[in-house]
Figure 1 (cartoon, rainbow, N blue to C red):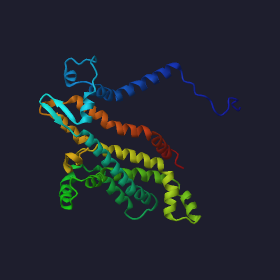
Figure 2 (figure 1 turned 180 degrees about the vertical axis):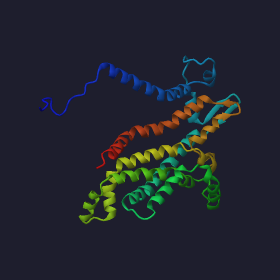
Figure 3 (figure 1 turned 90 degrees about the vertical axis):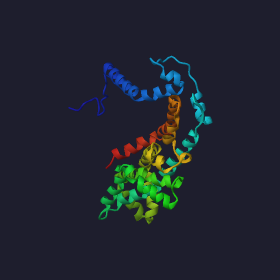
Figure 4 (figure 1 turned 120 degrees about the vertical axis):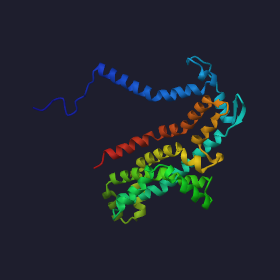
Length: 294
């Protein structure tokens, strides 16, 4: 007998189930957001307030930590200290944006080639490129330092951006390759039969269809490049170092400046957080692209 309720039957959840689900979600959000909330509180406190025992949630907020970072003048018990945090922040933007842009220019066509053109040894080549992401940075630091000194690339933005390809390029190559493989080649074949070139097919068909995946891969590569520490520590001087290395300046002879470190953390994660929120739609579309294959 046919069900008169139709093909779509609403799935009603009980109030207790909704309450439990909301409580579980709240606990998860609080668990992951609490460290950021605590660092935010530390960023508006003085060192004396942070280090008092027992700790207290009652304090008078202050913006002097952020003021010290922006003005480049840090006041400590041993006297004033010049810091270049804003220059470090700008260095992070240059290195991350430059390395991701170069990785996209090199990695997206390579990913398309690996996805569409199978040849002897293609999987071995792709895995070799991916292995650069697995290798520890210390494995390549010494030869890179020697080569960079010979080529004049040491302590330059160009040299650091090129080194950051060890982080960005393998990640973009493998992620974008998967999205290209999810796209049916029949669409491209139909476009080619109409008389269009390979380059036109790649630019007008493949790239738009894989756009969300490319955006997601670029975002992840940007975050990994932004958080890199060891390459810039060894291969760059103070005026080229990003915020991850510049935070070491807050460890002074008079002690560790916890308030300034917390303010630096908040200011350094703000760009990546804003970018992640802006690109959230592309991340969801990218995941959906891989889920509806076939």
